[in-house]
Image 1 (cartoon, helix red, strand yellow):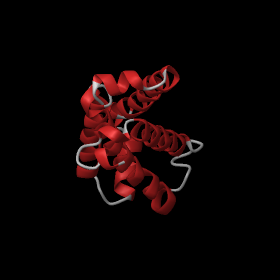
Image 2 (cartoon, one colour):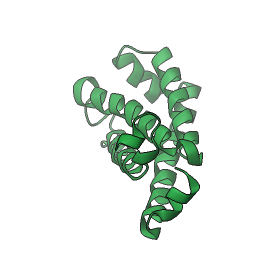
Image 3 (cartoon, one colour):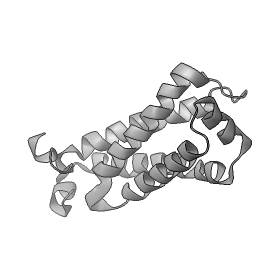
Image 4 (tube, helix red, strand yellow):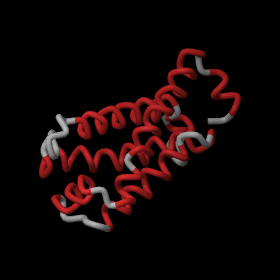
Length: 138
C-alpha cells in the first residue's frame, strides 16, 4: 500500500492490520522449527498426506516468505495471499486426510490454521487495492 493510501485508512483499521499481521506471522513462524528440524509430528503429517519430506520443506519455505512479506509495506497484500494459499492447503488436508485432531493435539493445529486463514483474508481485504495487477480493479 502506498504510504498515503495506508495513512488514509482509519486508525482502527491500521491498528487491526498490524495486530493481525503479527498474529499470523507468529503462527506461521513458530511452525518452522518443527518443519525444518523434522519433528515427529511434522513428519507424521507430511507422510500422511504423501508429501514427506519435500512438502514439509516447501511449505516451510513458503510460510517463511509469507510471514516476511507481511511486514514489507509494499508487499503486505502479496504476503497475505501467499499465506491464504498455503494455509488453504493445510485446512484441506485436515478436512480430508488428517482430521481435525492430529496425534491427540485437541485440534490445536487445525485451530491455528483457521486463525491464519481468516487473519490472512482480513489482511488481504484491508490491503486489496494494493494487490499487484488486480488491486486497481477492486
